[in-house]
Image (cartoon, rainbow, N blue to C red; front, top):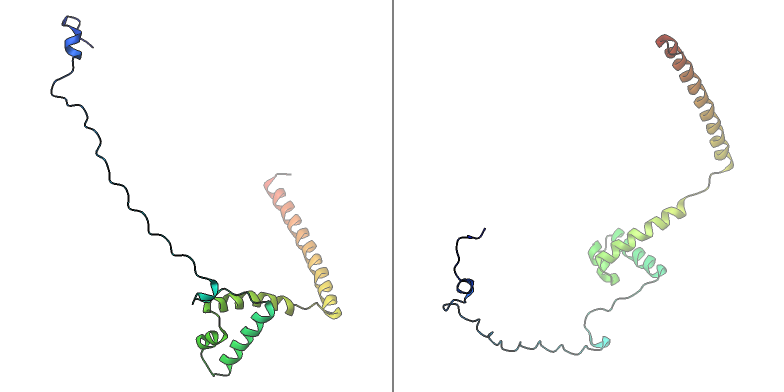
Length: 151
């Protein structure tokens, strides 16, 4: 709180101090250096790097088969066979992973008439055993309720 007994002039308390300097003008910065101009892009035919290719499923399977036969015959190592096929190792493993599930689905066969009869017989037996188990559990539960006096 302010001192009420002080009756000095307010103007003296608010008057600016002589030692405080006015803020100096901001220093001018030199302009930024311009970025280097990007080189114009070369035509696709001039680039030494291999362009990305798209292979059909048939071409993929053929290349995978070729690599597999070269490796199994023992002529070359896996890495060399992949290089000779003209693909990278990552591409080889991706293709191999995507081709396998398709082959596994194709190998799945339908059960024959005899197998269907066995399945039906097993389902019937399963149902019969479930009913027996349910009856046993009901009887046991009823017995426990009688012993505990809950009925």
